[in-house]
Length: 319
Image (tube, rainbow, N blue to C red; front, side):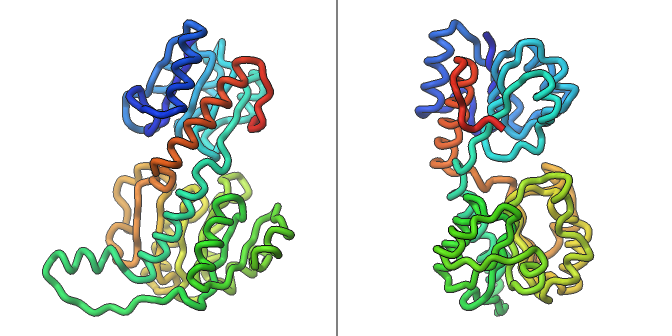
């Protein structure tokens, strides 16, 4: 048996209970571990030669296309190291009888932390002020307070809930939209349930915590941005395809969007972008879930999911 492991933060030299459990399983079943040596997510042609003889696969942010899945003769499970599965062709996997599972909630606190960090950095222009100070400049530049402002959360899953709690700690009013919202949870936690339009039109800060699907692709478009409050702060730590980066860039220049925080991009890594030239933009390299605690949680869940499926046991996180 071969098991492929590709997440960039779960490598051959990783330590922790997840890796210990995986190595023990491999030893007991006389299996072989195959790792991603590139240090980045794998594209189709890189993935095929590694995966074609594997029975198990712990997947990072690789592009698991129909072509990749069609080459898999023995594969039984794709265990995503993370919650998002937009880069896995679920239809092709189902057709081949391959189970796909994920690790919902494992990185929620880490992503919620970075979301609020980006909001604060954009609102107070911290990276720009840091850079100017180190350059010997002593400038005065007014930021924006979060106190008393309204935050709109698009997607009230585990991450969105974490952001709501943190925002309330800054005395912010919280509006949330989610097509599958838990109204009882919202009521008990002082979160105002809204439709999409209400969040777009009535909030000072908007953050995205939605999956990337055909329905959510470019959910933040030019037309939607024009309906937002002038000077709105926009933060995306979910998936790059949720926003139209070209439209956002133009509205940052006009002032319709007051500031932008991104951890995810339409193309990763993003190469060059006009966003790099703007002082009201704060960018991080898809690092929201990269905390010591989150990597341990995701590794544990991903390995447990893999072992449960390969052992013929019930796995609660099969999609």
